[in-house]
Image (cartoon, helix red, strand yellow):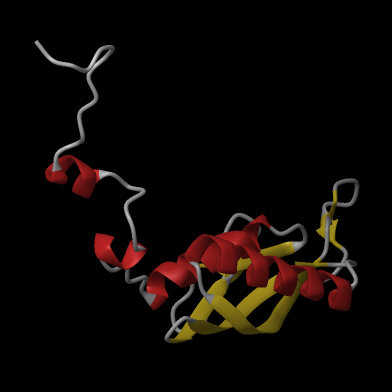
Length: 145
């Protein structure tokens, strides 16, 4: 018989402690590498989710492409350690104010890419490559081409 009364208390085995996610230094769990291509896709999706921003589809070497509101804008990322510079080529819905629309896009990319990928987005360059007007359903034509 034991001199201790009450429920027994056991210590977890060393292997059990090693497998828990809250153990010590995060560096002990391994290394994470996120490619520039992955960040480009994340930034492209954020851009396409931003109101008034769209991409283009089709074409070969820039010839024959057409505006597509369902397409993601083209994004290029230059990654230097945990700091990124992002370049976006996108279209804007006309008559949206260009400065306000692009500032909203820049803010969305900077904050959301930083939060989702854990990197510091220092610069977001935006090229507005086209303006797309809304379709006039009564006349069947566009306001701006």
